[in-house]
Length: 109
Image 1 (cartoon, one colour):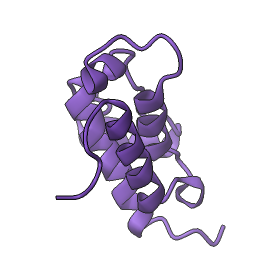
Image 2 (image 1 turned 45 degrees about the vertical axis):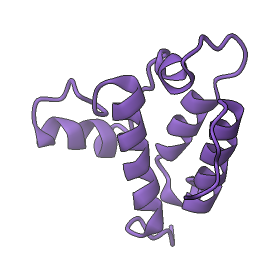
Image 3 (image 1 turned 30 degrees about the horizontal axis):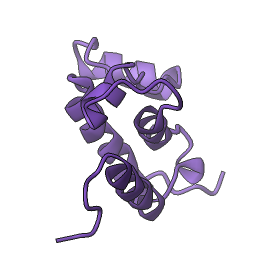
């Protein structure tokens, strides 16, 4: 399909893995007991990792009743088609906006 699967968009998937483990409490597809199970789930069946509902509370420290910005951001990191996945720059800007909405200074140190 002309899409390069191994490039900067792989880093976006990896960032999604890190964010999911930090805010979700477990790595993606933690129910898989071996690499073959993981490959079958993602590559053969096209199953992106699920994002648990408590990531909003973990990310913001408060219950979120409307919208689920962190859930949405993490899920977008796991878009299966690398060509359609958000760029690192887009994700970074969204993370900065989220940090500001949570009361943090989003500027780099």
